Length: 134
Image (cartoon, rainbow, N blue to C red; front, side, top):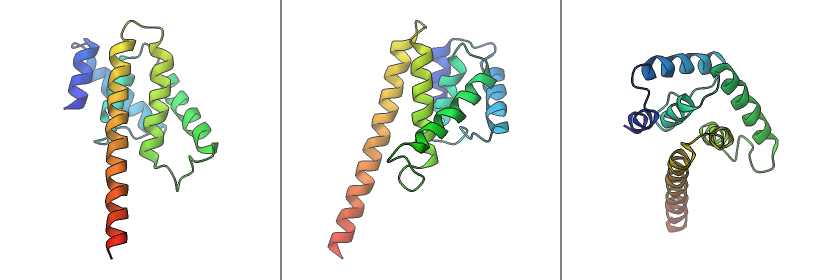
């Protein structure tokens, strides 16, 4: 459902499915999996960017590698899905600053990150409540 909303914003109805599949295949060849439920809207965001898919894949790889070297972003602290979400958000923000769709897509990215943070907070508070109740 979220991916469909992203593609409606893209307003490229003729080629959007082909562009989406092409980008997904390129990302998968780089071992980047954005075709999972929680990350699927990110694929839609990347499809809207006026950048070549191979460049996007290279940027995602370098950004995730850079984030992993930062304190607090290790594999035990932050999941691969979260790192991918952060990397795509950073890349999309840098590319969208140059386009007219920046406000709409930035708001979508913020809403998605907020939903993810709420889910993490709820999960950690329920884990704390469960562990203190035993």
